[in-house]
Length: 476
Image 1 (tube, rainbow, N blue to C red):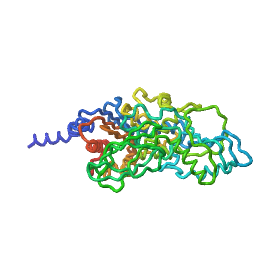
Image 2 (image 1 turned 30 degrees about the horizontal axis):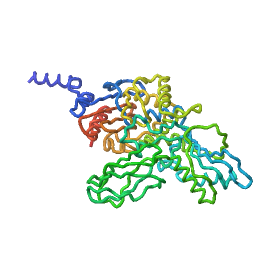
Image 3 (image 1 turned 135 degrees about the horizontal axis):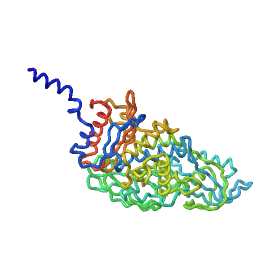
Image 4 (image 1 turned 180 degrees about the vertical axis):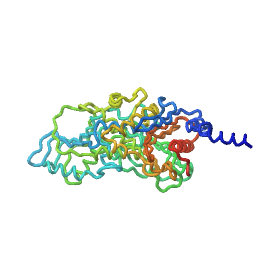
């Protein structure tokens, strides 16, 4: 009896250290993840104490968590009050008879919100038309020209996949964005195995041709993909949509948004009684022509654009923010120079940029790779040193609340307590952000590539891990 009591007493004493289960061991040794590429790190944001880590310096594919890098850098370099500008300019003379003998230019400034359904002033034409009237213009002898020379002519990121390019979530990044660079194609589908009929395109794109290889099947979701090169009106659509639908909408990218904007402005002017000369054009390269600015259209403040980017994981907005970062000193915005600007800024602030392999702004490229350590260092900086800490923090999705984390950790002790960015593409699931506890804030990055199971199963294990890190048991 005494021996049994002694053993029982010893078990009580040693059990916390001997029998406690390490969340790291449980997570990485699970059959679902034992062959995965994992990088994770959890720290106290104020003390810097490392609580949990596993290969924290190994870089992994981040998917949309890359938007954390893009949006944080934009706030730091541009400021949260920054607004994109689109200018209406003339290169001719306005006569006493209200005739502009010359051209009207829409000088793009890289604004992703022009006519956007997501943010900003969708119906801006009345203000533009009034600006022309105020300038004394009622007749234009020349053309309306969409000038998108602020960005490079390579509008598609070369590191994106062919499957993605041509679709709404991977649109071309032109110097002028219009209507989110997205059109909607409405189909009528018949019985399984038949080719759906194209009913209409919204907005109508003059000259758009579609090689339709779509099939009606038993799927219940949009599994259609558009293919086509920038500026080309020749498009193909492959894949499948649900059978027997009176209307089913699939979204693709507008081949030439600057031209479409110029065409729409021309038509709106004519509808208002203006006389406009030749058909619209697009200007891709900068010129030395002297022009007069007659109106400047401003976007929403950057803090709002960043919030839309992170909350909704908006690839389109992220890429425009990203490419604009290299336009300082009147340089042409380019992917190469934006990458250099981002690396230079964070290197100057002591972050390990040798663990950052960035090829775009939104994380769509499978070539992107970032370490958990880099994410945690960046997130710590934004929380403790940035002038824009509140704007950045408020731009992040919240568990069980808003954005892409609305279904994560619902009905658990961490509902509403995690502010983080998620990242998901094929075989990739990542989270990076903050965990708010009663007496401390944790900063974390949790990245999983190439698991042995479904994304849903991986998310469940990640939820378990985060709850154990925070000292909670799962309550679902």
